[in-house]
Image 1 (cartoon, helix red, strand yellow):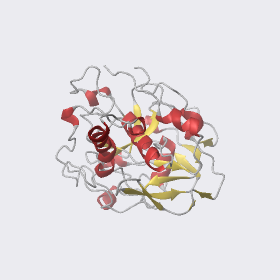
Image 2 (cartoon, one colour; image 1 turned 45 degrees about the horizontal axis):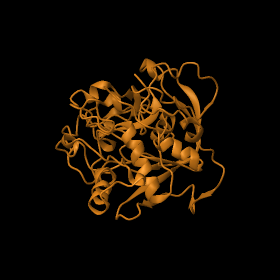
Image 3 (cartoon, helix red, strand yellow; image 1 turned 180 degrees about the horizontal axis):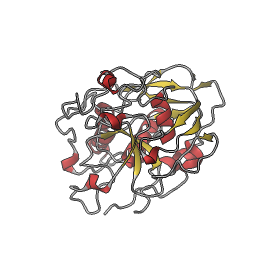
Image 4 (cartoon, rainbow, N blue to C red; image 1 turned 90 degrees about the horizontal axis):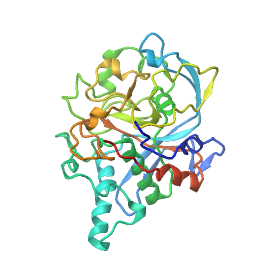
Length: 326
């Protein structure tokens, strides 16, 4: 498979160093709400203080071992998974407004400008509004981050796999962020046993210790990393801000399990990944860069590094061109 994101300039900008105590007027130890300019929408973020943790597991799945020490820098993370009310504003409303008023799409709101009609209502009978948006590709999720940047001037991106696991664990080294007892899962997650095979509105279950909701269950969440089965092997000492840069179209790491998942698949260390079968019923040639029509269990949340990268690096991240997927 070829690289979905041709430009490999992400590594330098992805890992922001924690150097200051205040960014854009926000203390790094405070949550905040990000308004989306020219809309009535906003989303909440919580601070994730940097630190060390043990990533992976021993004696569970081979691709989770060896367990190893990792250090990550501070960042903010979306309190909830990105919802349909936010994602639809990105995907369709800017496009439709621009066409009706200007008969063209400005470059700075280049969202999903030509979604295939069968994909325009990808709720799968689960509802929109505050339900998590689902079935978008990793590229589509990154373009949502670009849209937020154009609207707000604040750099958001997908988390790295290490950032995601650190944020999920919230200081807990057990199987789950609340310990090792799967009998407690229904208090924290929508999964196979209680979901009725559909997503739920975000924020209905208990959060983890960082104040993040639905980190496990509801929908699995994109990270930026390429999935490499033996990625943890060869990591020695304390590894700072690890990243498996995405250099191929498949597979990319998703984390957290979904409403379809069994208890075992909601563990903090569990790794999963994208697959070409997620586009199997896509009738287009080439296949859509934007949608995975057979992945109604995948969504995402955003992170904001404490120090944003340079404007040039931001443009490199957001403007990487997708390639054809046949």
